[in-house]
Amino acid sequence: MTDILTQLLGGFATAATPVNLLWALAGCALGTAIGVLPGLGPAVTVAMLLPITGQVEPTASMIFFAGIYYGAMYGGSTTSILLNTPGETGTMVTALEGFKMAKHGRAGAALATSAIGSFVAGSIATVLVTLFAPILAKFAVQLGPPEYFCLMLLAFTTVSAVLGKSTLRGLTALFFGLALGLVGIDQITAQVRYTGGVMEFMDGVEVVLVAVGLFAVAEALYNALYEGRSANDMNKLNKVHMTRTEWRRSWPAWLRGTAIGFPFGTIPAGGSEIPTFLSYAAERKLAKPEHQAEFGTTGAIEGVAGPEAANNAAVTATLVPLLTLGIPTSVTAAILLSALQNYGINAGPQLFQTSGDLVWALIASLYIGNVMLLVLNLPLVGLWVKLLKIPKPQLYAGILIFATVGVYGMRQSAFDLYLMYGLGMLGVLMRRYDFPTAPVIVGLILGPLAEAQMRNALSIGEGSWLVFVQRPMSATLLAVVVLVLVTPRLLAWHRRA
Image (cartoon, rainbow, N blue to C red):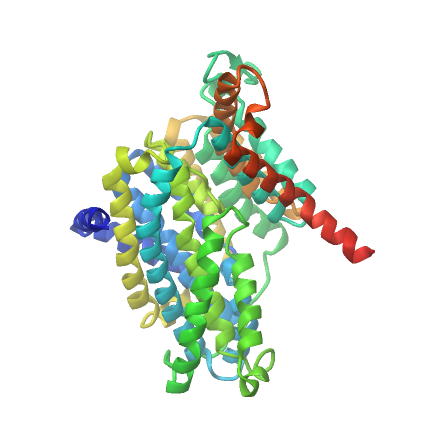
């Protein structure tokens, strides 16, 4: 415990330097602004800004990206409450009660409980990350190649099965990502494979390029093609404050939401949507009889407080598997992993030893970012709402310009631009036909790592595939993978019967 506290204080010393504080503030402000703008999530923004990793020092850029990630979760609730338009998928549930509160003149209370609830949940979750991430890292060091391959297999199946409307579409997107990950030079035999004679493919397909194409470019093109002229009506905003009764009703919901959200963030279970829905269901069941009538009518404050806390706790918890196992459990976490890889830093159990300064500075920046976001969100809600007035054509044209300049700046290659816009069009088709894009990024990043671990595991087993079932941990993980794929079908069959 003393060792963790010493390292955390060292992290604060790094994160509290004037330069890093400025990066944290810039990330939090930009993230909040992005969260407010409907459809523009942290994944799109971080993907768009990934090229800056070539110019900025690793600790500063990771603090900046973490600020964007966090800020988007805070800002996403603003449009959910005022416009019934979630800025982020994790804030979809907030719109259920928050918008009804806004329509009945209680927008201020809804915005206040979401901002303070986010702060409470984020702070508690950051303390849990501080305490448990190093312990999990020490445990993870004892895992061998069979266990790591099975862990990655679990990440593949859960991300593919949970995201999107069908498991088949999720797995199709995953296999496309895995195929992209095989392009280039084989890391074990050094043979060139699947390049089609294109020299630019020799080093493999750039994760940054794929992320920018599938998220930023696809988002802009999709809006231009299908959603161009949709208008929003805004509710009038009263003062951002809560009454004593609303405080009394909110704090138990914040704590329950945090308790539900944190465990979901640490496992590859499809992001923050599941815990927010669970939190909403719990609050609806646990509400006092006199407050039950507010759900779905005038808006119940517990229905905003609980899901917002669950959302932010889940977002913070994604850092645990990302830093300790190198496994991203959300789209943005996958793009953060590619940012680390751009610096030649491999996330995993050794990260706390090899790049301890960066990890502890990043964790310390979460504490600082939480305070910054509370200060930014409560007084400046009026300013964030004005961002909604930016015309869509100018907004999405700006995104395309940023994406083009950023990707071209990486290698000064026109081929990269053709590939980025080609992937952008593919992203539009995937979105149009409900194919999730997250499994593509997860497959592209984890595919080559999974291949290497599989080969190493087979070497240990002298070519026998039984090595994966002979070790207790890997056998257990394989059983979980089978359950993830089979359980939904059994439940569906049972319902039909």
